[in-house]
Image (cartoon, rainbow, N blue to C red):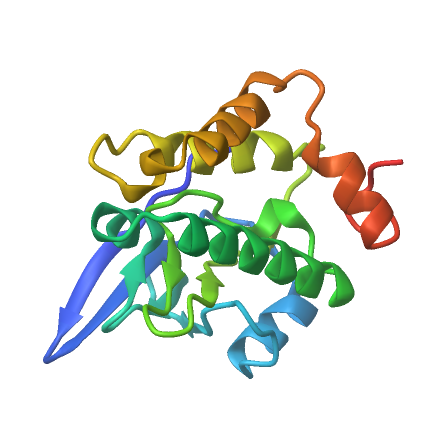
Amino acid sequence: MAKISFRVKNADSQQYLIHELADKVVIDEDVLTMLEDSEIKGMIPVGVIESATGDSFCYDITDKNTLGQYFEFTVNKNTILTILRNLIYTLIELREHAIPLSYLVLHKGYIYVDIDTLELEFICIPVESEENVSIDIGGFFRTILAFVLSFPASNIFKSLDFSFRCLNLLECASKCCILPILSSAVGGVFGVN
């Protein structure tokens, strides 16, 4: 997968992530229109900046906390389960809008969480790729769980049963227990049979 980079732009009290587009990229105009119109729940709306030096996508991240920042302060069983549930709901929402997972930036530093509702917002870069991009959703979930479990002072370790269940989930990486269960629950939405 291609490396994605952003630069942060501060304007007055606003903060934006800017992703500069490479020359001759093919933009998925249908998805871009939905993102510009804020039609997709769980996606940060995108703006397009056109300039003589090249086009860019702009995402308003003012007053947003990344998933990584959130877990630095709050880690407990309920928040982890709610975040995982919201991750799944957001991925289902994407599938319903026929948005490829390869358009998402699946990194804890670029997934934003509403502190009050624990709803998530992803950055979506609607650029088509000529190469066949495979997304390891199971690996993504394992990475998020490993990140959360890495906080030694977290309340989650007070419940050893829950901790061991999470660790067992991480251990079965080659079998990925999550996807078949989710797939059957939501009718093959993740492309796993």
